[in-house]
Amino acid sequence: MKNNRDHNYSNSRRDFLKKSGLVVAGGLLVPAFLKSQSISPEVANGRNLVVIQLSGGNDGLNTFIPYRNDIYYASRPKIAIEANKVLKLTDELGLNPAMKGLKKLYDEGDVCIINNVGYPNPNRSHFLSMDIWHTALGRNDHTSSGWLGRYLDHECQNMPPHTAIETSDILSLALKGNKSKGLPIANPWKFYTASKGVDVKNKPQSVSNDAVNFLYKTIAETKESANYIFHKSKVFKSKKEYPKGALGNNLKHISKFINSGLDTRVYYASLGGFDTHNNQLGRQENLLI
Image (cartoon, rainbow, N blue to C red; front, top):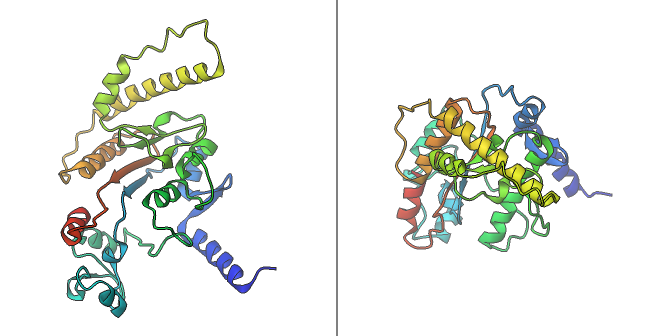
């Protein structure tokens, strides 16, 4: 028999799923619009999921600041953000003063903040925490697939690799499935030119095992995606100014892909450097601008 705490947790979880637009697909939680798109990939309703990962151990208390909490100021006398500098969201919580852009989006109703998200009994390991973030599983669950990768496995097996794109040379665990994976593309032109030199027509006839067949199939699909992405996206020229740096460049690529009409549903970008152990106030502020 469940105790009241378990019952309350179960109710809270159901309420969260209803309000967040998440649905269960094959035993995993996915955004409702992704589930609907899997039924008919051609009908996207103009909606895409863009995930921006802040890599490292970001100081959440100096990002979303409890500026009315005396314990916050008593516990960090040297790095606490003064209350009169906080960008107020509610009577208790506010944003780091560097986050004026996000505050504007929040005021316009385009941003929702889910605060204090974590897992029970954390061991404070960045590596384990990132694995949990990428897999959406508990600390004792071992898997080689990520939460978006399992979505691709379950709903997108007959779709091209560019159904999910990460603007990087290395694919994150989140986008790795057991059967399907996202596509890492840091530079569409370089990706296209590199793929042109790959020959997939002359597979050795003497080799016919499943692993080799899968390899050649993957290479052929990747080459096809590289050709499609390059020629489809080169038509659109953005007139917007993007912040200088890796994240700005990645978001510019994503904007170009979306405005070009790519049949990609998920985009993934990362901003690193959040292990601000020294000179935190200045370093974190520069990252949050």
